[in-house]
Image (tube, rainbow, N blue to C red; front, side):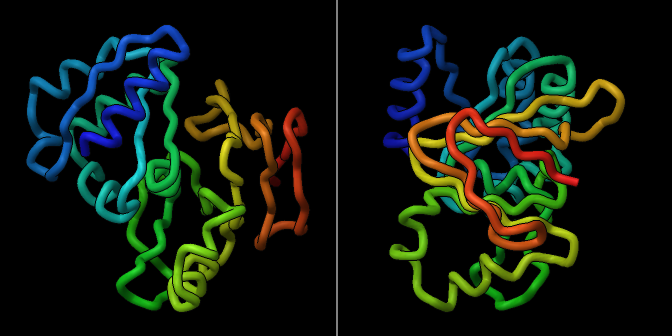
Length: 194
């Protein structure tokens, strides 16, 4: 955890922000009023890496998640890298059970399943885990996001969902792998999900 905290501190320093690390390690922590109160005025809420299923299960349907979602809908930025990005989807791969349906995610990016570190990911995990990641529920779009790359969108003022228009930022690319026409997008390009 110290590793992830230090990475977050370095990223905050680079953008001139002040980091407030919240040690949400267990589901009980997501009911802690001290942590919940610190979310209200956050300008950026950032989820780091680890286990995406554990992160989603820890936060799902908790007062902390309710406050995060409320603050985000009021204009705060919400971001995740690695497992943090995967937990934001509606369905997180369950690496412990080979099923098409995974663990319920935080549903910020419904019908998208991001695969972070895409340019390295399949070299890190066994074939059995790769098959799980590529088995998303019907109607989901599986996207690979290379390292040092981000896919960015915003709230659609007309609905409660994320806009369908996204933009690629960073050094590498974003790949549409299934659920939509297969393609690769580079920095500056936009992706529109139907």
